[in-house]
Length: 127
Image (tube, rainbow, N blue to C red; front, side, top):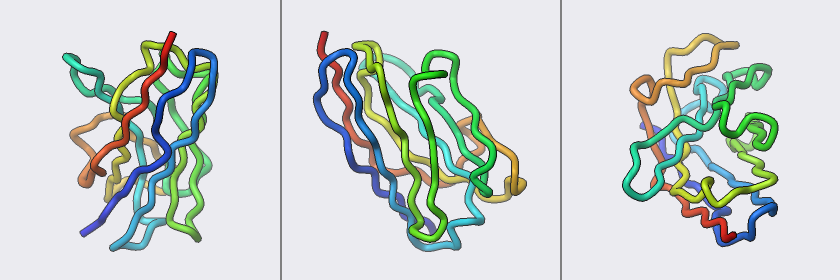
């Protein structure tokens, strides 16, 4: 079993920044490919970005490319989502997810390939 706990959400003005954190426990962290997803009210969950087990590969949704950055610290069992130039349309609950069985340098954008999910953290961007 893997437990994921997100933190760092909050209310920010458009153009501002936030850093989300996700703490993992229960399994060797370097065995997990990690991803961030979000779900806005009335909308389906969507992929935000992913990072490989090695930390060397990342992949982002077009909507956040150039504004969001994912990183991980395998020693601390943490993954981060640095969000800059935030827009009101970034308002959503953000979820951290973990996938097992993914290659060491591979990234995964399909939510169905993720085995474990956190509870989510709310991000609200005011205009």
